[in-house]
Image (cartoon, rainbow, N blue to C red; front, side):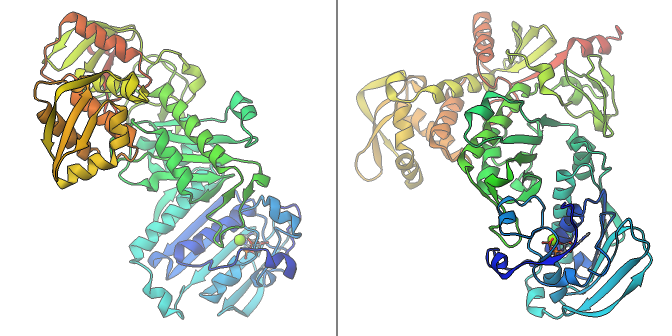
Length: 591
Ligand code: ADP
Ligand code: MG
């Protein structure tokens, strides 16, 4: 917020520099603009009320700085703003709004009443507009702050109404907008009332975890890991992107969603749409979530304002970053490092053992939005709250080893290896664990020379379906890297001249078809090398039902310890579950 809150008309020269276009597309755009104004006014509390998906009415009230006496109608003039005065200001916009266009644009397509009172002024004032024209103005008693009521949106624009969806769908979009701002501004109390029902509220108070609990519920919030800005680390000094830091909360796998809508990206607390940064977040979760699942993440990227151009899109939801690629990799690395430090072992006690939840070393419990101190003791929590418990502070648990040393005790159901570690009992899924080991090994191989290849004395002909043929052609480079040598031979037939040694079964044609079948199923993975590596790992890993001798179990655990992400298979399923010593003691009522 600027110190000077008086509203001025921008000069034509500055106006000419502003990205032009439609501001009010749908009810949610109105809510977005009004909430942004409240936040720019320094409000500590923003209440939003809507009826009929926002088409009947939208009311946004705040306790911010208010509009100076006599300036209410000026606020509805195009390009009148208190946030920008010179052209140079455009280079370093620090408020959410700056164009002076939202209020006039809204007033052009709805009936609007705005009332406002600055805190140091005795009485408030109001102004009412129809079709963009002031029809009534006067004094009004009210608490300090501003309230804007927007009614009958698009009533006179039937063509616009046609493009809207059901009022429930529009209400959902509004809830999404409010959620985003509630997450970006945890120090602000938000409430959203939809058709008379309180649908969302956050406590204010500044804790992102509390805001996240208000938006996503306590259960989801409890599985969030926090991403805190790195102190003056090598990352900052190395990077020409200047001071870029990443702040946020990210859900620990396997908690995930079926679409990308739960990845919220902010730049300097402005919610933006950015495919590349969204993708950076997805990439950080690579191998930790099953195919078709997406992370829940709230990621605020702090960049010096001079490195961000917000004047790209009329609705300001797109920004241009001066060094997007560096920012991309910083975001990805930062999130990846938080995930790889955490990479939780699902706790037996949380799922199978009902009411007992253990808190592993260095983790903290969020319970009902309250943050408690790190605990080592098992904690009795109600079943619904016994979701995997997060570690809020990563520095507390920065252990270089990602898996403790495990000692194999035996096998259960010829499927799980039972192991003992310093923190209790572990059940390791032998197939998933081996998949992880092989996957990382295959990915590390960059060319056929480092691969153990099995050349065939006689080339083996394999008949492929058109789909398999297309797949082989598309993936040729990655296949060759892993040691395959194939060549077309006639219309549907391929000659297999060599295969990776791990594929080495008696019936090469059969193994080849099985492998291709697996690869077809991994169609959610766009990276060719990963897709081949995952399929090959899945194909070659020891299976459930296979008896292992003690040396094999020991070797499996030892190799698993050496992987980078030992706790999940490449599809994101857990490789192990853990029953802590504490939980055991509790189950046996030893304490
Ligand atoms: P912009 O936000 O780009 O300046 P708007 O049309 O959204 O343009 O608002 C015009 C002006 O009205 C703002 O610059 C601000 O001075 C004033 N204003 C709007 N909403 C509020 C509010 N909730 N509290 C205080 N002032 C406001
Ligand atoms: Mg504005």
